[in-house]
Structure formats: structure tokens, C-alpha cells
Image (tube, rainbow, N blue to C red):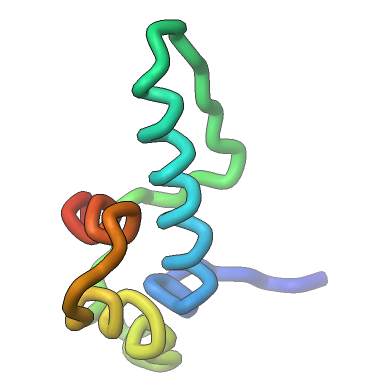
Length: 85
């Protein structure tokens, strides 16, 4: 049995990849005039502190969200995601 705690992986490359794609999809759905429903079956607490002990132990955010926040000239979809962050 695997014991997965998101605090160790928050902001990682995979985390950023997943959330940026999800953000793009939801923003695209919002452009339609029909309503939609999105149910997140794997939602966490929603707001993570990168200074927490667990996050600092793995520091996976350094290869993910930290690089993205420091990047220049992002594509529009990533820029939209960074603004949400």
C-alpha cells in the first residue's frame, strides 16, 4: 500500500503540468454558452504553503512552479495559470 501525501509533491513539474492543463480545459468550457459541471474526485486542501516542513523536505516545487513563476514570455495558457496562482 502506498502512502501518498501531496505536501511532499506540491508544485512539482507533474503537479504544474496537470493543473495548467486542467485550467486551460475549464477556461475553454467557460467560453461556451452551455453550463457544465466539474467534479474533482481527487481534490486536496486547495492551498499549499511551500514553506511547510513536508514541502521543504522534497523541494519538488523547485523544478515546477518555482521555475514557471520565474519564466519570461509564457504562452497565453500558462500565463493564465500563473495569474491564478
